[in-house]
Length: 311
Image 1 (tube, rainbow, N blue to C red):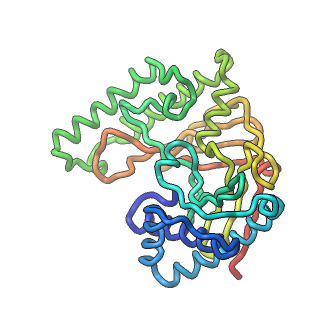
Image 2 (cartoon, rainbow, N blue to C red):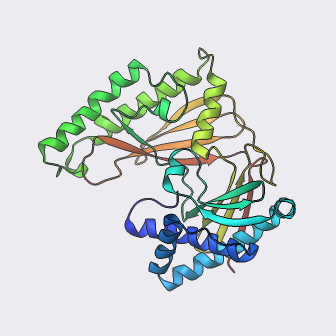
C-alpha cells in the first residue's frame, strides 16, 4: 500500500493517495469517508513540499479524469456514493487497492505509487511459511526448504543477539554467498517443486502466485513520475471497463541474475515475467530478508496501459 521505506517515502505515498482520493471526490461529487487512514493521508499531504503537492495534484487530476471516463458506463448505472482510503492490513490480505470508489452495488479501486512500480515487498524468515502465507498451497513449505533456510536465519539471529542488536550488514563478510544466494536457491527450488511437471497443482499454483503478486481484486495502478503519470488496468476478474487479463497456467522457468542485483526471475506463460530481488531492508542485521518484486514483462494486449504527460 503506497510507498514503503523512510519516513519521507511513506509520507509521499500517503500524500499521493490523498491527492487521488481528493481528485475523485471532486470529480464525482462524493465525500471521502472519515477514517484514521484518510486522516493520516491528509496529514502526509500537508507535510510534503508545495512543489510535490502540485505534482501529485496534477498526476491525480489527470489519472482520475481518465479512469472516470473509462468507467463512465458503470458509473451511469451504479452511481458513486463515497471514496474510501484503505488500510495497510487490507494490502497484507491481498487487496492492493489504496483508494476505493464505492458505488451503488459495486466499486472499483486504485493502487497509488510514487516513482516506483514495485508489486510486493514480501519478507522471508525462519518462521514465515511463504507457500502458505501467499496462499500457494495449504501444505506449506517443504521440509527440504526449511532444512536449507532455517540454519541461515538462525545464524543471523545469533549475530544480532551476540552484538546486542548493533551488528551491521556492511560489516558481515560474503553476505551474498552466505545468505542471499542460498535463500534464493531454496526459494527457486520451492517454486519449481510446486509448478514443475511432477506437480498436479502446477496450473493452480501458477495462478495463485500471480494473484498474490498482482492482487486479489481488480484495480487501476497509477504511478506518478516526475513528468508524467502512468495508468495500468489489471482486470483479472472482469470487473473493470478495460480488457480482461488472463492468468498464466504454468511457470516456464526461473533464471538467476548475477552482479549487484541478487535475484531470481520467474517466467510464466502468457507473457508474465517477475523479478524477485532479495535484500536486507535495514542497515542492521535482522533474522529476515525482504523481496522487492517487480514486473519485467506483462502481457501488453491484456493489461491496459496509458501514459499522460504533465506538459
